[in-house]
Image 1 (spheres, rainbow, N blue to C red):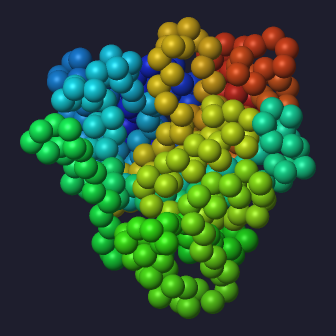
Image 2 (image 1 turned 30 degrees about the vertical axis):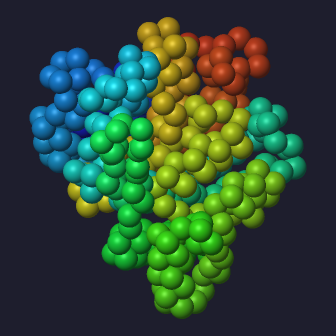
Length: 354
């Protein structure tokens, strides 16, 4: 099978971690006799520096021509510390989501036996936790009308959703729940927000279409509490853009490290696969960042973009083996910490030997 991938390393540790994921992808392609074709594009602060645009048209066309996009991270302190900057790296991420029609972000939360002691939660709470967060990605407050009034002292951000946007993401969430433990949690703030009341109204209309799936409704503040108290109670969670952004980062601590969680952003055109963490600029170029989330994102790429579950599984098995062996980076190491590049080499070599 021919695999055509666009690689967008981005900023900070992005180039280092995508390089390790590519090692795993190459090892899998060789092992399963796939023809691999990949090309690099610029985005984020790196693209601003080069062409003045965080998501240039050339990069967008590269993504459209590819079968999948492997993405690193976006963000740079130069822009974080300048609230008046008119062009920002994060605008590139939002533009990519909108132009590629990436309406759904899929974030699995799964614990690893060898790292249960690393979680800030008690072992009995997190052992066996395995759920999926599905976040709407192209609507809501991040994309609504925003601005400041003439005096500059009043700012506003508008949270807007259409019925079509809500139906689309809920349908996907029900499909996921149908393939798992048949439980869907719809998270909103319907007691306060009109947009959330529309979410709940649409969900209540759709629920009878999926009689084999248990649908529950939960306010976002309650969901934030229950993720920590009873993470094993969740199977599939679906919510709007900003709530999903916050809840999925909260859920990441269950695993013991933000550097372990992958994600897939899927939609109308090419799907994007990326770690959920940021650009970690303090570690850039030091060869110390954890590449596992990006490598697991590559596993999701094989599964979702190419429908090659066996190829995805061998990457997951390689990651599990590296963690069981203790061959990991400093954020989760018990003994000697390994370099980013060494972990990438170990995992790709493990795949080659199977």
